[in-house]
Image (cartoon, rainbow, N blue to C red; front, side):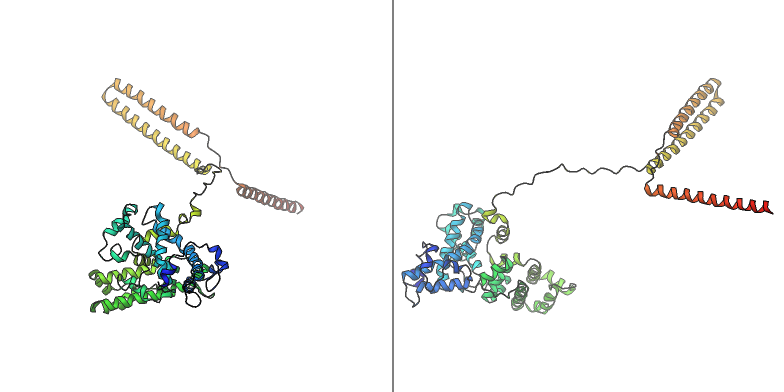
Length: 446
């Protein structure tokens, strides 16, 4: 019986009892400060015991690091599982995926690799296996439709449904190839800083980074991924595409100033280079979406939205209380028309009334003239109508002219200016009067 078979049945030991079973494993409190790689190393050491033998005590010690790994990653697995199956079975699917991945954690999985990514892939594999063993009706309809479209030999067919942690992928999209060409530790840091970002302290503890680690390392990782992508593209491209690889790299830099006409013509005719240009542009502006779509086979964009929303946390399931309305919304009111504008409007009305009066009088005079030429009776009637029209127009004009005009109110500054002018005029008049009096007294003395 191998190590993974011995340790596979140890899942029911309480993490609170681990403090009395310290050996080469870790206590529950100490496990919280360890990285994923250290927890996997502690798990592997605990499974075989200090001397390599398989003992019940060593098997029990292996449960403490497993409990800590479940605490860290099961919430994200449950979020992803809800995209594959109904909410009532999501937690069960996530737990089953983690259980199936435990043998690889104890034996073959690289501790420096992106464990969260591999566990999410195990969720897809486990859900695909449930479709084969009679639980197809429990799965989400979209996930079932996606499974039916998969080619034979991929997820959902045969051994690909085992749920074991995947081997490095050397095929697929160029983005996936570029990611898996990076070292495992860089791949883990790329996942936890771009796709599944967390607090820098949590990321440092999860990956075992030193205190001098800075989130600015994300830029360096993206640049390394960009270089790896260009290398794979150039290696697999045809000869004409290779000659334009330099232009492709230059026009997708963050500081690219302009496009190239030759490259644009080539992109319109070459699907491979057009796809590469699109991937490099998205790597610059949407690296999280690009990586998630390349690395997660199903529901990548939905996982990003669900995992980053507050509703993904059960503590945020209750709807936020609505804020009480303290007062009714203020309705904007039109500013009152100033007295100066009102007086101008009245003047325009007076001018219009006077023009109307003049027009009516002219029309009446013209009618009277025409009637006088035709006959006497018609002249009398026309003259009466003309006099009535002139009288009505005159009354209308008089009403408009005699309407009281609103006085323009002067503000404090205008009042002060007016008073100052009055004082100045009085002083000037007094000075002039004094000069005249002095001139008269001088003449009388002479």
